[in-house]
Structure formats: C-alpha cells, structure tokens
Amino acid sequence: MSDGTFFAYIALLVVSGAILAVLGLGGFGQSKGARIIDGVFAAAFVAYAGYLLFAFDGGTVIISYYAFIVPILAIVQMFKARKAKRQMAAETAVPAEQPAPATNQP
Image 1 (cartoon, helix red, strand yellow):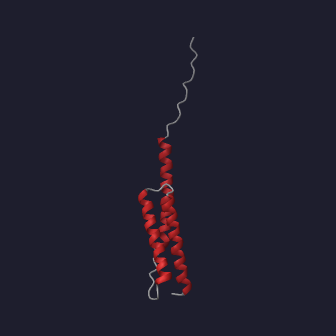
Image 2 (spheres, rainbow, N blue to C red):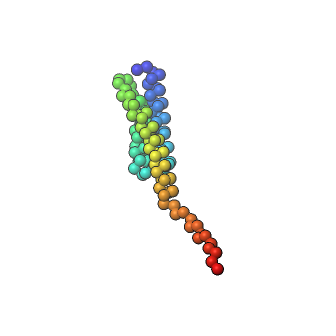
C-alpha cells in the first residue's frame, strides 16, 4: 500500500468518525439507541485512525469498507427518523374546530 493510500484511508476514517460523532451528539430526531451506535462507531473509527497514524509500525492494514458505508447508512437513518417524527406529529395534531354554519330560521 502506498503512503498516499495509507494517509487517505486515515483521513477517511477520521471524517467518517466525525460525521458519526455529529449525528450521535446532535440527535437529529434519532432514537437513543441509534445515537449510541453512532457514537460507538465514531469512537472506533477515530481510535483505529489514531492507532494507524501514531502506533502502527508496518505490516498489514485492514481496510474496512464499513468505514465508508456506515456514515452513509447513518445519514439515511437520520432522514428516515426525522420524516417519521414529522409524520407522527402531523397525525397527532388535532385540527381546529370550524364553527358550524349559521342557519336562517324564522
């Protein structure tokens, strides 16, 4: 693996971890469980990037494509959760009562 590929992979791990950290901390309509999972993956990606950058001294680097797929899936999940919350709020909102039409009675 070339140095460029190695450092690009580290950069992508950090970016993926940052995206997941923002999703986990911000919530954006996600459930508590989804936010925890985002945080766990964020910590794992950033920790692996830190290991590769500071402690790795050669050998085999495991390139996981999950590091690129997980943030995309998390963003899709966030949009689905936000849409579901908006639909739930719209369904539970009680429409205002309209006054009864006036009748002309003698």
